[in-house]
Image 1 (cartoon, rainbow, N blue to C red):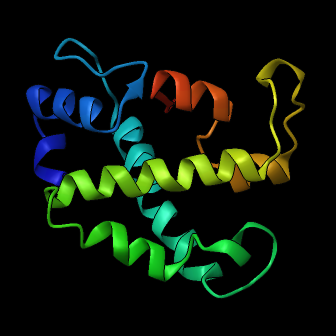
Image 2: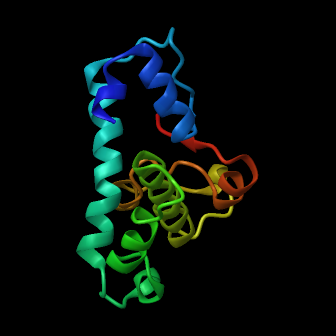
Length: 136
């Protein structure tokens, strides 16, 4: 992923793998902060799964911890980077559902929820219907 982030073509590939919205194209002018934010979101998904694994509270009572992370990450039918994208999608949907969103327009963002949800600024219905994940 790091190597892909170093070139415009690579960043475009990351955009496609992670279904970023807005998309990163070869013409997109990204700052170092944009890239740092992207990577912090990705490793944050892993941090959340590990930190709360086996917590047995709320959504974590039904998974979304280390066992599910390992199942996704060891799927040999995908490339390793595809597995990272799949795990990111899995956790993003989990955080969106956990927040209980029905429509973004009716949702009042609190600092606590913003910190928990990372870049999950979309509804579960939007994710499932469009497959897009908003980064910014």
